[in-house]
Length: 329
Image (cartoon, rainbow, N blue to C red; front, side, top):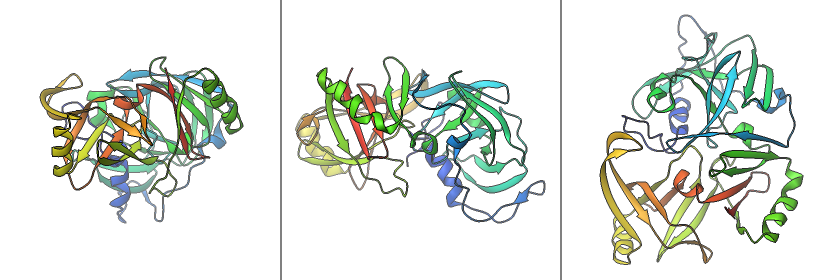
């Protein structure tokens, strides 16, 4: 995964790498005030605690391209980040929410260098609500850490992230214009796509694969000029492009790529190189031009299809069938 681009910090575009950094740096010595825990992190069934069934809708705010959902945890109000590539259903911020550090899981570092320790409290989380639309009660085994370093981007009331373990159990549509996510049972897939097709709005239904064990990061191949680009979708990604030097030269010569630098990035002072691309396609289907992608040179051609791409469409996510549909706004 890539890293989150936080204000006043040099990070990339996805929160999940900071989380997964903890997994890669498992330690076996517990903090003196906490019980040590060993083995793989628990497989959390967040939806087992839900008091609501689909369909339901979650409205959201856009904060510098990130999807932020109002919520409450044990009466503490704030906002959650929707990051579809985060493995856990909910990953809470113990800097905002009073949570006990009863069981120490592991420690590691975020991409910007901050040490992060992961804990579970022994007693259940009493209640979690999302946008006053759905709620969860008496949740056990919910992971938490100190996300205070994200306050410059998400504000002091950041509650944590909502991730793949929650979203994978629904068919859902993401609409950046109306700023809402609609969740459905999977048996509504055929009807929903048929309605979009009848209205002449269905652009493509894209099968995806993933190198992740649970397919939380949909991956697929795209074409840009004569170059093959490995793409992936992730709502915790603002949009980033990595090209080989040869691909950069070819695409620039073809007029499909422009590269610029700026002293500002999403409203804050930060020196950044970014790219704009035109002519992107998938199986000969033209796709939207994408601007303001965080840009670097590397050993392969990859495109993070985050906010800067997703905002051009309504997207229909189906982890059960491993498809993602693009719908015209």
